[in-house]
Length: 614
Picture 1 (tube, rainbow, N blue to C red):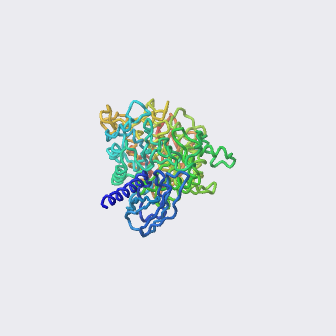
Picture 2: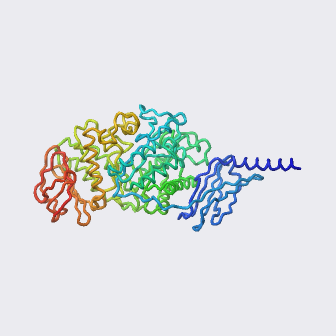
Picture 3: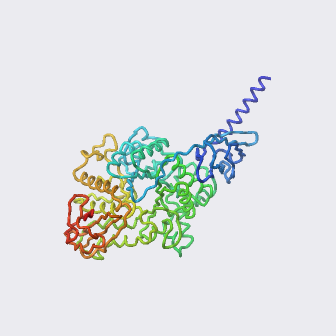
């Protein structure tokens, strides 16, 4: 009798272990009570898990739907979590005939941290994590992907620990917010150092660190008064994502018929009233490269999965903002829904979309409550690529021309089209980033071009972003690949010959550049006229100078940029509308006091940033 009992118990254990072994992935791994959106989707993966039945008995939690696809290895569970539900373990009880298994699903209490958003009061410091600093060499070589710093396209070993070790450098420079290129898992052949081929949306890349380390880094940043922006990608995943070996549904990936279809990158087709359907579809459904399968956000399960993933990261790590890659490429209706659901949960949160266009009208079309076209794409912030393309050459000063032919006039003309933006303060401005040639040029003889560009960037409208290394004159052109503009920050690796994180390690010219940008960044923090004031600018005349003012309350900042190679004398009476009854201007950089009620000479390639006083 005893032998039979033991045999029966053994069989029961075997059955339970068999079903338990079927569940190999549950995403998200946890959720929180008290969310404004009470619906939760749980994706469960395992052999034939889709054939099982589910029951739940937990106060406040009810099954809304158990959805199955054509792939029996997936089950999509939709739960409703009532507002007063208590934290705890929800027992997901799976039954498949005689087999039963319980998965304990954690519902956690929320902590009211992060999600503060970012605004024109901030300045973003953009970091490519693999190339900034290596704080933990032990995580460099994983899964046969070795570090090779001589190869611009290989992993170099930068990680979260390296960023943490240099937070004081970032804060002391005057930046308020850190934007990180993607830190999610990229288990791709060769390493995918850039992070844009995600293979697990819920994990930090092990070569950067762990989920817990990322959350801890965010907390440390907040303790130092810094905000955090996380880079995300909804358009595609990496070809090594487990999905690609066993798709959750036939329509999970666009054009998944065995035939690779290249996107046409025709981003204007989304807003073009005359666009042919085939051109629109090729944009949204085509792939960037074969290594980046294009996700189909029209699949309702995938759409919810992606939206929940971003909300999970906000709630788990308390980030303050998201930069969304390749914004025009995913399904338009999905992107609108995503923006609205994130904003509903976190009203102060900010999302900036990569709206890579050559015309302001196209960038403005994507911003929330577009004024011109009376539609609402839901996106709070857009990237001002058109202004970036102009500033790349506008500060070259290779001629003495003024008027409409001058480089300064091109800047003026671009700013004059701000009427197209619904919220010009929520436009991201920048000189360069990880996808463009660096603004700094190796052959620049002096810092005149650099100083004028930085002065403009930090005093014009919008949210400034500066690419890591710009403050110490890092240069680079894309040449054969993007890796040439994503070079290592000298001093971020043990044994580096140079350490540009320190004053002593930098050249005289680098220190001059760093001191200049640091002074402006720190000054900007305490200058509301610049961070949120009205902008009034004047048409550049034959002098080739661009003059504008930022005003708020009793504070007026007057900026003068001489775009020529010759000294220019200005009749300041022309600017009486903004000078008003002020008589003096204190230059922010030099501290020099100059009269602003008479003629003023501006040095060749020079600039003034005046705080006006009576």
